[in-house]
Image (cartoon, rainbow, N blue to C red; front, side, top):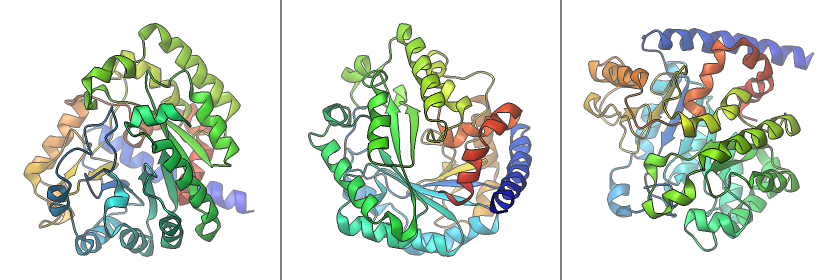
Length: 365
């Protein structure tokens, strides 16, 4: 009986999302379904493929929204029907009131997630995260060993990640959050992803997600050669991903459509024939309160949630102009699950294949 009830919930939710997907694709402004809330640009790492983590941290902190701002802004999204909030950054654990923010959003009824590099997770913070009621936690891990340290430009990064994961496992029973890994796929690890899955299996984690790196965001251009996957090896990556899909059908936290297009992204960054839903179904809130579709496209001219309402911003001419740029792919391009997974709604077979993912997404677990 419970399975039938869950299936009905998934199907009813599908109709809600499908309606917004169609409206957005054909040029309408839609209410955000998911928020990626970048609470800080500060970061404790300086990863080779990321340009964050290097600016003046105090200056960045001074620009961030306060917890009072979050308590004023979050209800506006809830009233618009937003269901999911994922806190990210930068490193969200560097935001002083992250636990208060999670608890407040949970009290409002959001499904709440956290994306973290896990280097700051002590036993105390793991317990506090569990008590916050967070629904899902995704840990950045590109390889379970020294290679992760090289990619992330930190000599003991993997050791800290592993320690953080053990603490999170210890307190997982408090709120039964979903605990998974996100591996950034690059030329340094594309042929070693088996080790990521083996590590997740050994540690009884809930999922593995794969995310291609964005060449436009490389911090250290001297590393571009290492990070770029040779074109003649993309077939091998495709074969491996097919194998992972078949071997771990309930473990990969992306649709097969998204997964099988990772290699294609490196050949065709514009991903012709697909739609980016950034700024529509998935909207970013940046640390200063600006809204946008992604790291590259922000509606800065529309004002900040610090001093304007959500309705004022998303119905402004500046925000509509932003959405036109998104639909034209007027950006450096990416292939990111949070803004591209909605493409499965135009591929009925993919919806059927992804029912388990959609059910899990209802409560984040």
